[in-house]
Amino acid sequence: MTSTRENMLVSDTVRDQFLQGMVDLDQPNSGVFARDLAAFLRNNNLPLEIRGIDQELSTYDIFVFWHVLAMSIPLSVGNGAHSGPIFLPWHRMYLIRLEENLQRVLGDPDFGLPYWDWAADGELSVQDQWRTDLWSSDYIGEARGAVRSGPIANMAVRLVQDAQNGMLVSTPPRPIQRASGLDARVRTLPTEAHVEAALNQNVYDQSPWNQSVVSHRNVLEGWVQGPQLHNRVHVWIGGDMGPGTSPNDPAFFLNHCNVDRIWELWMNQNGRDYQPGRNRGPQGHRIDSTMVSIMGAALAPEQVLDPSRWYVYDHQLIA
Image 1 (cartoon, one colour):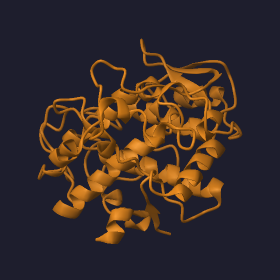
Image 2 (cartoon, rainbow, N blue to C red):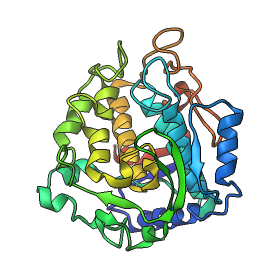
Image 3 (cartoon, helix red, strand yellow):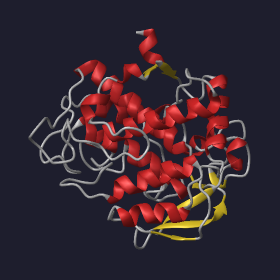
């Protein structure tokens, strides 16, 4: 059934469902323990280690693990989730699987993930950007420090990434941490002009397919004159949004849903175009490459170029 993805700050119903769904998914009742993930990595000779305490994890934690795993798999360009053409389709598949799990725990097959239009907030003053309603107890809690108010305060971080060696660590549960607007590199969110710059790129991606190319994918990912757009939001929020375990913060999904929305806007203008195609371009990033998945069937980019079997955005209903 096709769901509708709406602006988090517009629909109170979607806001409340999203927050409740996040908390429900974060209950450590998956039947999967940290030791099981360690065994999975060893048995499949995957380039990632997990250490720390043994504890039962949540379905939400498994999504965190999946993101780090995809990032740990090197491809001919970038990795299984970033720094190449696969960035947008892989995260689209990832969001679809999260949305399906939220629909399950909420008992609502029509539920659609909300997005956060961070470019609208980027037009505000520097001081106002981290004081909007989004960062209140009615939404996703504090913009700075530990998240201790609102529904998200009931979530816990159990998997973290070691900044020195990239290893995944199972740690005693703690609150989500943020440092919005405190990184000297990035004091402000992206603006509408940044979004327009991404929409004005007339090719999805092109050789050499990496962080240096000027293309819709790379401008939107945020490497061009970066950190911009997607990357800028991660750096601006900081805290748990910084490392590969960034899905620990539900803000991750609000950010990526907006990134996906911008990609959808671009395709509405330019067609459902994706480069590289079959048998050309970097392996792992081609239109028929199988993307890294541990939740649900693995998909190829060509299978997610038209997401209408799963969802549409609210702006598409107005057109």
